[in-house]
Amino acid sequence: MEEKELQELFCTKIGLESSRFKRKMLSQEPEKIFASAYQIDSMISIYELLLEISQEIGKEKLKNLLVFPNLLAFLYERWLKAEDSHTEELEHALKETISELQGAYGKVRTENREEQAA
Image: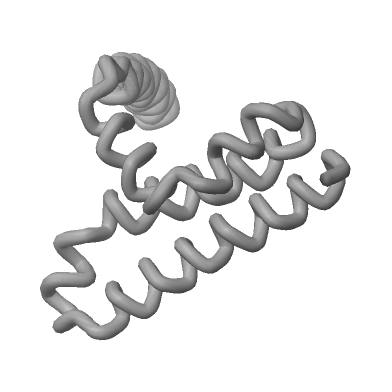
């Protein structure tokens, strides 16, 4: 089988898994869907990334991934166990932005006082 055919089959496989996950989620109550927002976002991201990298994976890896059951769910579970600095990066960015806002606010207050004094 040609590599291009394997890529197409792989993309079809993960597309079907994604559709099955979506149907499952949409059959849930709204509260359950809302509670699953991170999982939904992660599964979509994993699916999209796999589509992108499917052209780079190579023939042998594609063959192995084609027969791997519930690949998206497996990769999501592995992602949950991975060390992630996302929260720390977000916290750092928030603190930095708050400091910048505080500085800008202080500058505006100073300018307003100067205008009122003049």
